[in-house]
Amino acid sequence: MSSVEAKELNSYVRHTLRVLEDQDIDVRPLIEDFGIDLAALDTQEDQLSQSDYSRLLGEIIARHPDLGLGLRDGRGVTLLEHGLLGYAMFASQNLGKAIERHSKYQDVIGAALQTSLFVEGGLASLRVVRIVRPELVNTPAKLHYETERLLAQWAEIGPAFGESRQWYSRIDLDYPAPEYISLYEEVLGPNLHFEKAHTQIVFPRVLLELPLSFANEQAAALCEQQCAALLGQMQAVQGFTGQVRRLLANAPGHHPSIEDAAGKLAMSERSLRRRLSEEGTTYKEVVLDFRMELASSYLRGREMTIQEVAFLAGYADASNFHRTFSRYYGATPGEFRAGEQTAAPTGP
Image (cartoon, rainbow, N blue to C red; front, side, top):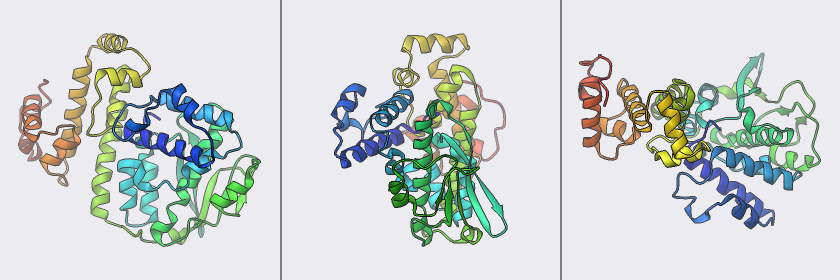
């Protein structure tokens, strides 16, 4: 994952370990090997780095190749477990709008596989179109895991618009049927077609217009605005500065210390400081720039109060945010929103 939110990553770890325990698999060796603190998963933001999480999955798959871990991991995972994007989809007016938002902002959750919607005649299909995180799917087994998890999670959306978990007409897969085909049928239903040209979920086009049970387009639009701001921050800068910004973008409202950031990037704090210095900046400056740019993006909209903007930018104290923003932009948040200040930032 260009790193999913740290809390989401912890959620994935918890869920995977629970899946293994449900299959009577002893998870203690994995916990010890990867230094997982079970008691801290609910509270800490920095349990495993991205690379360690990928290695953990690889180790589990290697030890239990016929477990169907992706199907078991994806089953029961709701939209709300995907952070801001999940909330935006959950509150969407209908299935079509939810899919549209997912396709547009899937990079925010660090999706390994990119999906797109195709419509032809009376049928629609949600198709895997490319691998966007090759480091996560560097073996056929990991690719199958990500594919299985993706399909199982999309099956879970059916009840949100009054359908069963097998709300689609069929699923096509671009690889041969595995040994555990019965688990595929249990999780995804019987209408499975292997060795096809594409991996895709095919369903009646009319389902795109079905309203979702918890539709609230105003709330969905607000979440989408935040997704857009986060995505913009993730894509803005390259190099180690860009990598740090991507870490920040995937943990909105929480900004890790330089020690935590270095750990997530699999390097020492000293090395990260040196790399950033070579790019003409410091960790403190990267965090401040990110916070202020994110805040200014939110303030250009009208949906959030200034206090809400402060919280999402990582400031628990609104007065501290007010002072920092005013010093950075030469205008208060209220003046900035009113359009009284359009000049470039003055810096810290």
